[in-house]
Each structure stands twice: as C-alpha cells, then as structure tokens.
Image (cartoon, rainbow over all chains, first blue to last red; front, side, top):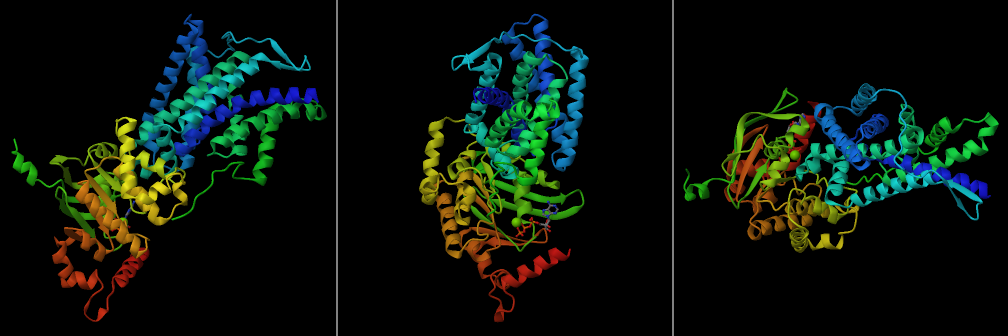
Length: 294
Length: 275
Ligand SMILES: Nc1ncnc2c1ncn2[C@@H]1O[C@H](COP(=O)(O)OP(=O)(O)OP(=O)(O)O)[C@@H](O)[C@H]1O
Ligand SMILES: [Mg+2]
C-alpha cells in the first residue's frame, strides 16, 4: 500500500508539469483557435537559450529574465510574421503553420546553441525525502518542480479574473464582439503566445535540469497532447486534472502493468489511455459547456 | 482654423459617398452618405440585405474582419477622417458598435461582460465601478442577473448587457444594430425607451439600424432608408412616417393593406437565398 502511494505521489508530481504545458496549449487554442503544435519545440527552444546564457556565465536570475524576454519577443515575431497574415484562414492551415514554426524553432535553437545534450544545474536539491517514517520515498527535485509548476498554474488561474484575463476569455468566446468593444486581437495574441513561451521556459528549465537539455524534451512536452484529449482542448480545469491523471496513470502503469510487457511502457501508455478515452468521451472530461441560446 | 460655431454645426459623424466591397468582388454599398448630428438619434432603415449592417461595420471598421473594404468615399468623425482607424482606436475616441444579434460573451458573467466594455479605458477601479452602477441604474434587471453567465440569460437581458457593455466605454456615439431583433414588442419598447433616456441624460448620440421602421421612427429625429446599397429616401422622422411610400412598404399601412412589411421581408429573404 505504501509503495502504491509512493508511485502515485511521484506520478502526480510529474503530472503537474504536464498540466502546465497543457495549459499553454489551451490558452492559445481558446484565444486564437490555433492548435499550437510548436509548444513542444518552444520548451526546447527556451531550455537551450537558458542553458546557453548560463554557460556564458550569466547569473541564474538574469538568464531567466533574458530567456523570458526572448520568448516574449518570439511571441511578437510569430504574431507579426505568421498569425496576422493567416487570421481568417481555416484551423487546419493555422495548424500547419505551427508545425512549420515547430521545426523552425527546433532547428534554429540547435543552430545557435548546438545539438549535444547540455547539463543544467540550477541548484534544486536532488536528495530523496522520506515520509511516514521512511515508508514513502519521494524525490525532492520532483517536489520542487511540482511546487513551481503549481504556483505558476495558480497564478494563471487568478490571472483569468484580471482585466487582461477577462479580455482573453472574451476573445475566446467571440472575437468579433471582443473587437467591437475595443479589445485589440493582435495584442491579445501576443499575450497568449508570451504566456505559452513562459510556460515553455519553466518546463524547459525543470525538465532540462532533470534530463539535460536535449531534443527528447520535445516529445516529453508533447505528452500534453494526451492530456488535452483527456481534459478537453478548451478547459482550464481539464488541463490541470488531465495532467495529473496522465502523470499518475503512466507511473502506475509502468510499475504494475509494465512488467507484463517487459517494461518501458511509460513512453506510450499515456497515448493509449487518451485514445481509449477519446472513444468514450470525445469532448474530453471537462469539454467546455457549449451554450447554445440565441 | 474653424471657429467654434463651425465646430458646433459640424455633424458628429458624416459618411460620405462610401462604396463597400466584400471579398474583392461583391459590391454591397453603392455610394452611401449620411450624417448624425451631435446629440441626435438617427434611424437607418431598410429590409433584409439592404446594407444596414454593412454601413455600421464600415463606420466602426469591423468590416475588415469580414473581408470587406471601403473602396470609395470617406468617413469623418468630429471632422476627422477615421476610415483607416482600427475598432480599438475608434472605441477610444468614443465611437462604439453594438452588434446585431447581441453577441454577449456567453461564458462570462453579465458583470464581466460589462467590464470588458471598459477595456480601452486606462482609468482606475473607482471610476469604472461608478460607471457600473450607472449602467445598473439604467438596467436594474442586469444588477439582479450580474452573477449569471450571459449565455444563460434571456434575449432581452442579453440586449441590455450588450448596450450596457458599450456604455462602459464611455461612448459619445453608439452604432446600434437591430436592437429589436427577436424581442417581444414590450421589450422592444423598453429598449428604445432606454436609448431615448441615454440620449437625453448621458448625451449619447445614436445611429440605429432597424427593420422595425415604426418603432425606430417613433424615437428617432431623422431617418434614412436604404435599399440595395443605396439611400433611396431620407428626412425628418415625423415626415417619413407620413410619407405614403414609407407607409406602404415599411409600415405595412398601404391602401388595402396588400403589402405588409412581412411580405417585403420574405420576398427579400427569398431573393437572398436564391441569389
Ligand atoms: N461577409 C460578407 N461577405 C459577402 N457578402 C456579405 C457579407 N456580409 C453581408 N453580405 C451581403 O451584403 C448585403 C448586405 O448585407 P447586410 O448584412 O449589410 O444587410 P442588412 O441590411 O443588415 O440586413 P439584415 O436586415 O438582414 O441584417 C447582403 O446581400 C449580404 O448578403
Ligand atoms: Mg443587419
């Protein structure tokens, strides 16, 4: 039983990070109807810039700020060069555009910073923590990562109630009406892509510290896809709960079902779980209530 | 240099011979001119597809999002050309549109909807909260429903929310597109009463697009009739109401009552479907 709890807690903590990345997707999808395939590449991109600055001897905090500035700048460039020109196009065309952006970021980041695995140490403790008289062992690194992601999630949820947050939700609901009251769409797009960039930065730093900054981070970030299928593409609570379920589910599956397959199922289990779920509830756990009333 | 009297005489809004084309090929407005004086209520009348909404969107510049373009003519607001400004800049200048079909933000509460109207204002909480109270005094029903999601409120409440939301931007002029659409006659009356009150008390000028000619001409000072993208008649509201053509085609009071407004509407709609 204690062992089960240990695995469950570890999985939930890993899941918080999935929730965070999934939320990056949801915000962009709601505000601009764009399914941002580039979110995964943005995580690597941010991680590469951050580790690059660190290696140049820039202090930790300043590196964070500089990378954040790079991500905001990137949001502006994407709006200016891509979104603005495709605004009235169909969803699939915008999706293709983000695939293009994804490969560009992936490659461009490596062009600048090289493609070898980079170790990253931001000073987060890595020693294990014992709970319940040593019956449960958790990694303090995972705990810190979960805390950071949790705090950021909380900020984003509170942000929804602010003036800008309200404007984001208004644009998500009806972008013509939002324009009619004077909310400028391009400013809102830059804001949501910046938020997605900052989410990517946090995920890049956390995963980068754990695994090294390397291209494999992209596929880790794309674990947000099954999270989205589970939680629904437009639901903030869905992204959060979905991330936790995927995080816990894949760890438990690895431990309890994995041996049947000879292990190593953690990489694909989330997708199978999501596919199964898709067959039963295509709109996701919390697929947004569709209000149809005229 | 214009003298102060010249400024006072100048219309608040003047649309000068504009032509609008959708998708580069569909010519919808074929030279429309109209004026709204400071403090006036002007009605823009016409059947389905006449071009009322297009005219209003040309003014508020929501046209661009519909792939529409003003290809001729110009629009002046307070004597200044505004046809190149984006909607956000126009709202800051005090010119705002309430769209046809209300378009409330369904997943925001009524109060949050109202607050989005204050987006362009850089003012602090206090001023905005005062205006919220002001909106609630015009629309007491909204205060009761303030915590409900706008998507779950009635059509009348949504129309009030949409107008209240526009009021939160502190407008000098509201472009109001078919406020009567889908509302019971009693509610339509109530909405127009409030429009009238806002005009007198808050000094908001209105350009109201309406199919409900009767109601619009009762509250407006002046009216324009649009047909097929052209102004075919204009005049003081009281005079238009007495005009025999208007009576026959738009008020459904033709000799023998052969042609009601409803017939005209169905005819146009058919034409549009077949087109
Ligand atoms: N986005 C668009 N693209 C192409 N044509 C359009 C578009 N919007 C409107 N039209 C056409 O322009 C004409 C005028 O439409 P508009 O909506 O301005 O009329 P209206 O007077 O507001 O009608 P209603 O009373 O039905 O609201 C119609 O023939 C319509 O089909
Ligand atoms: Mg219309």
